[in-house]
Amino acid sequence: MGAKSCIIIFFFMVLATSSPSTGRKKQYKSCKELLLYFHDVIYNGKNKENATSAIVAAPEGANLTILAGNFHFGNIAVFDDPITLDNNFHSKPVGRAQGMYIYDTKNTYTSWLGFTFVLNSTDYQGTINFIGADPIMIKTRDISVVGGTGDFFMHRGVATLMTDAFEGEVYFRLRVDIKFYECW
Figure 1 (cartoon, rainbow, N blue to C red):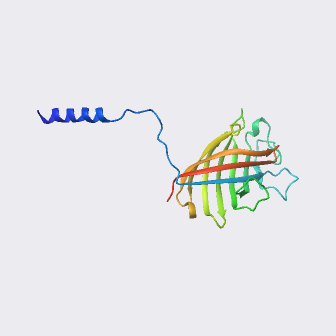
Figure 2: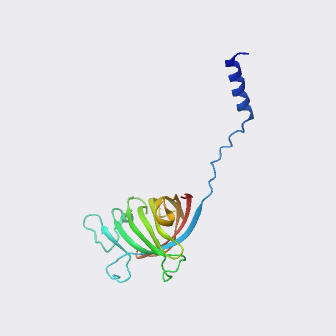
Figure 3: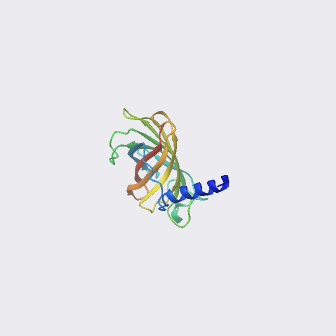
């Protein structure tokens, strides 16, 4: 038997003994998990003392204290929101959520998020960076965790967002379930 024949027989033996693909996605195990809440109080012209976010850009002719009609398309808001370990707005903050959201769709409530959790508590020190689309009308949605510093140095993963509460167009609370899949 020649070398070519041996290679072909070896190939078929490997092929025959390997398990067939089940078509399932590979399951990953997270290396660290966090559950946090952030509370957003948008400035409406009357709540300066409590507001944690503000509209900084709006469609032409729009008022910067009222979200635009048509699914808020064109509004851009920046925020510096408290982060808590539970869903109580008055709980002691463990950090701040700082960034922006852009309402970027004309036919449904959807925003694009870019923000950082700045954590400064006895349990956690450092930052976690997030980016991605937020189709607000879906109960749970995922955005990317793209990095961090301190206790979260070079961490990456996925954050599952859920609107935990909202009060008209003035207040909302997001439940953020973070699963890191790369931890340094």
